[in-house]
Image 1 (cartoon, helix red, strand yellow):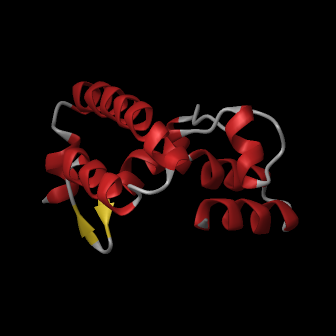
Image 2 (cartoon, rainbow, N blue to C red):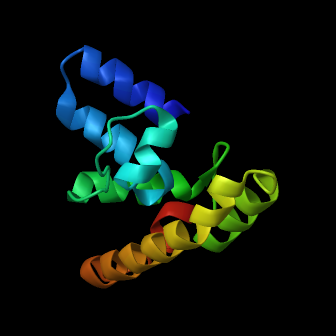
Length: 119
């Protein structure tokens, strides 16, 4: 719930841009119908800016305090949340979105994002 709590705190402090980065990193974005399940306004919280997408990607590539690959991270998330139907239903879409963005970003920077983060 750190994304929701961070969003709420930043909005109260008047930092809507930073709040958007914070909330949009949950599962690489929430649709309006999903947002209400977290007590959020019924609107999309999809990462659109480069900052929002990078925070989403890098957040997924950290397990605890260690860098990891997307495949390992999503495998870990599936094990940890096996009993949570909502999260299990969303992990496939989040993984596909994260993978697509990682591939695109790797092409743009001319190097593997995983290699940059894991090194």
